[in-house]
Length: 208
Ligand code: UDP
Ligand code: MG
Image (cartoon, rainbow, N blue to C red; front, side, top):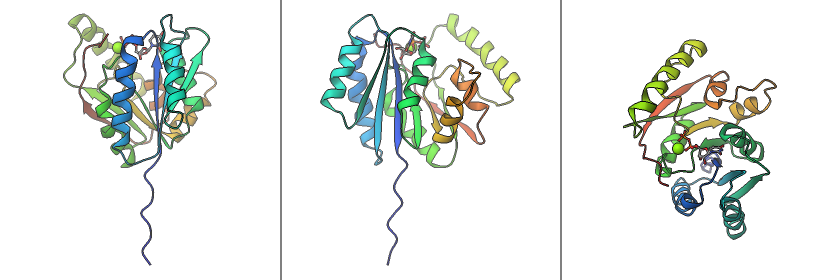
């Protein structure tokens, strides 16, 4: 008798959304397309962070049309990107969790690279943006911040600004149970990580 292959770990994609009505249709289409190639059970958790445009209605409608793959979390007001992500973690159920931004700066086609590294046994997988599509005015402070965090956490990572990142359920659970939360998820995650890695991902200018 041959053992059936063990199922691939299930995946939650968590995306914070603030005034992204012009990006949502393309975002959802590309994220679903990308996740469907992975061969695992997945859910896409989109958290509306008190948008002032039509993002909330669009997310509610997307979830009504595709309740098996899309979960819409509608926050009553604007709490900020990282708090919105925490709200998404709270409802997510996957063995693995991957974050990305809603503005298509993190190409959804790169989700598979992060997923595969998590499957290899890393518990925090960070995207490393190449080439950066930001102005020098943004790159210099970002380089300084990366250096400071590296010195304070002891974890060597080159790109703390990239929000295309993946975590195991254990790391997400640990972050959720933190009483004192750094509002900055990449730093918090690294304080619970045993095995981290960075993978090169492409990066686009904000779509809209
Ligand atoms: N975002 C959010 N709440 C906010 C601001 C931003 O949920 O108060 C979301 C936004 O929709 C996007 C992500 O967080 O998905 C990153 O935001 P943005 O692109 O403005 O940041 P940057 O690219 O400059 O880091
Ligand atoms: Mg952005």
